[in-house]
Length: 318
Image (cartoon, rainbow, N blue to C red; front, side, top):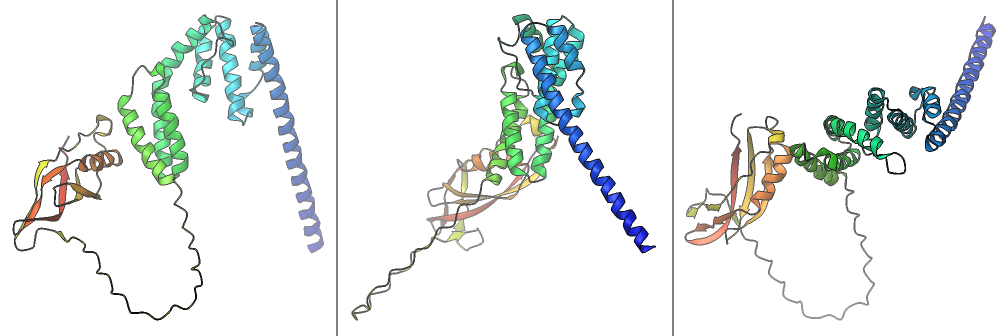
């Protein structure tokens, strides 16, 4: 019985291996055939034989193409053929697939006539806002997964799309949001600085005995007061303007946050630390604004001193 089971397992393994090899061979043959057909369709399109090129492209199943670049090329030439043939309704569907695959693609003068380029541009202009919103959601999910390198690339492409002339200034608030996340992702993805190599100390000859030099006095570190000390007078705000919340993140922020600033003897803010955040984009704006705040310095018995001030940020309810 054991010999029978062992033989059966060997037979099943051999069949599975043969099937896998056959599937791999079929996939390679299919890829080569698709590549040949796409090249043929491209040549037919270049010679204005649009019907023949479209027939070849319609015979290619884009679901079999695992390479995004290959799928993009198929949809682009399909849409251009349909536009050249005046089949506007079908062309719009094909253009939507091409723009979704590559929102940055715009046919050049060498690839299409002015009429075809205008039709493509009209459809692309309508689709771009929806594509931008979808790409923002995808980039935000990548950022939340802490894949900061990929998120940086996605947000950078997103900002480029929003700046596209065909966006006509739409979704400006979303650009502010995307730029904030781009800065956060870039900072998180940056590699840590390489540790400095310590050079070995040179071996020196034994020094001649000499008088012990005086020990230098330790530098005086200014004390930072917090307001509980006797005789302390807290600083008074001269300029303390809080940034407005961008409309693109309204409803996404916390109501309260806490900011810590250290104010020097001249009333300048020399350190800003966010203790409780409100929203990544607003937090960046708040810390930047705090560095420009100005105060009448705190005093201890009439002498200006450094002071640690805790500021509670409370946003209006919406």
